[in-house]
Amino acid sequence: MRIPDDKIEEVRATVELVDVAGEYTRMKRSGSRYKGLCPFHDENTPSFTVDPEKNLYHCFGCKAGGDLFKFVQEVEGMSFIESVRMLAERAGVDLPEGDAPEESDKRAGIHHALRFAANFYFKRLMRSDEGEAALRYLHERGFEDDTIKEFGLGWAPDAWDGLLEAAQEEQIKPETLEEAGLVKARKKSDGYYDRFRGRIMFPILSHVGKVLGFGGRILDADDDAPKYINTPETAVYNKRRVLYGMHQARRAIRDAGKALLVEGYTDVTALHQAGVETAVASSGTALTRQQIELLGRYADRIVLLYDADEAGVRAAMRGIDRILEESLAPYVVALPEGQDPDSFVFERDAEAFREYVEEHRDDFVAFKYAQAGREGQLDTPESKAEAQREVIRSIAQIPDRLTQDTYVERASDVLGVPDIHLHEPPPRRAACGQRAATR
Ligand SMILES: [Zn+2]
Image (cartoon, rainbow, N blue to C red):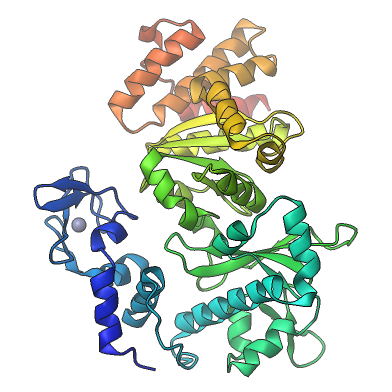
């Protein structure tokens, strides 16, 4: 169905391009315009401008330019219609729902199916008898209705064809549901069945708010089924590129210049509810380069909140080096033993949580060296030197020379080694070879 012109104009008049662009790159006022680093090409000095009067953008570097819709199409790789739908949702402009999109437009079909599913699950949770137990469980865990709404939590009925049937009534084909990761094909007979059954649903949104997939948490803890299942990779969902909670967190992250990286869906929702709105989670994957890039559009610091167990420390170590490579500043905070952020903010409060993070925040130099100490690596001169080299190698990952220098100074303090010995990092390759040889 065509979108009426007056609706398109209403969206254009309501949404400020500078706000939308500000979600992809930090925009600063410069005279009558706004300037920022171009989201379409690599650059170090801003040549991307937005004219807030005309609601148009132009880049002097790569010559990209156009209006609100063009910007979203280009930056999100969407069709015109998709860009209008996305911006209309944001502006609160109601568009005619229309028929299911043409099968030829596969991605649009998948997005349509996902949007439908998110609505379906949400209504099942909030307005049906079958969702009652799940809603009670969420309330008992301390989640308020506003949070449930903000994150669009839902309930997948404990049935083989709950979603399947409802979607077919809306002319959404099972094949499209399968492509969206919502149903699976039966192996021994024809037909499909719901992937998510008897689960609390956490929609995974793109940072601009499109439903890309779901995480589903089992309600009945005695069940043998895995606690969480997630949407598999699809044409629209690539878990390496998405951070859970980014859509809700992006403004707070931009304002604070930093992001708080936590483990799970409920950590994110609990922290947001408590007022710690910079929390996001990399769901189902170790922190990836693409996720750090995404955060880098909004922030220059990433605080990793990790479990003080072995797996948690290893994940933090890996995260640190990735973050450094992307020219962001990593900080780490170990959680008190046996606690997760979710239980922490519910048992105590947001203020206590913030204080804890402030007090226990380590920069990576201190963290790596302290960790070496905990592992007994500082006990012999040889292993101590290796621990120092490890820190220096991390510093060498930082692309920006000035930042490197400040960390060299910091390392000099922490390691008790004169600066002069820190400036020439040992070649990484030789060091790796050495380690491989001793294994
Ligand atoms: Zn450009």
